[in-house]
Amino acid sequence: MRNWGHEYMAFKIYKMSFHRAHFGKGYLNSSGMLFDASRLYSALCLEAIKNDCLDEFINLSFKDDFYLSDAFPYVGEPYFPKPICYPSLKKFDLRTLKEDNDTNKFLNMITSVPLSMMSDFISGKADPRMLAEDEQSFFKNSIVVRKGEDPYEVGVTSFNQDVYVLATQSDLFDELMTSIQYSGLGGKRSSGYGTFELEIVDLPEGLEGLLNNGGNEQLLLTTSLPEDTELVHAMTGARYQLVKRSGFAYSETASQLLRKQDLYKFKAGSVFVNKFKGQISDVSPYNYPHPVYNFSKGLFLDLKGVRDNEKLSY
Image (cartoon, rainbow, N blue to C red; front, side):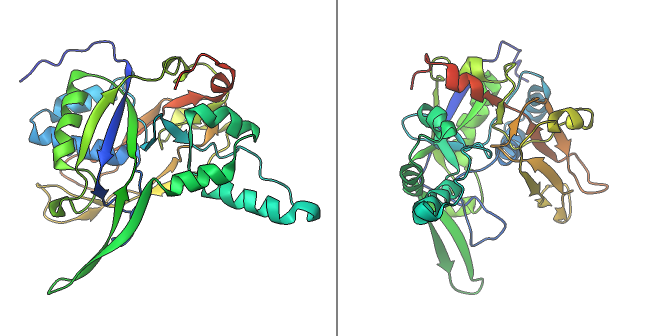
């Protein structure tokens, strides 16, 4: 057994260049460009089993200084989730009704914002049409039809740009990410979907100091859930959206697919006054032979720091 040790873990950008992938959105014939941290975490656990280091990875991930974000676009610079409360939607004015309606339509299409434009986006100075049209060019969705004795339709995403996650770097995490690029992420991996080329890069200067700091306007970067003792404090003054996470548990030691426990989490892009630690939840079915973990630890970006920090480089 290798001794991975424990060193100071700095944040790194794990940039992934996919060709085609199936990141399901509830149905086999639908797919999206991005995925949340819990999907990657589950895949890393399976990869750790293959590499005989599951216990080491679980122990690493439960450490207080281990963080992992959802996936976002990387187009020359990191993008971050659109803050759900910014900018304010335009109130309709009969004199500018069409323009206001178009602006709101484009704002609703945007899911992520480049770091260099986040300050302007929050203040309403960014061009929502440009951001929405750029985002639509990052990927293309299609449906692949298989005919024969077992026909099916599968949604496939073709990528024109990279995606990335933020994570605290360690030798073990680097090794698992390097390994999983060949195994693939998402569904239909046996058909060749989900493999990628990995590049580990430094954060833009000044960004690490804005992660999980003490600011009072924190943008959630990981779809996550506070611990029970944190919930009331975290929700005070928060502007948030909830998402339901469910699915089926797969195990080589279980005889059948069983439904995991449902989990309601705060969606990345929610904005909090009080950040929270979060948790790694066991969502295994009743009497399941082993835990089934859902990664729900919080990682935050200080929005006020983004607006005020002129030293950020891109």
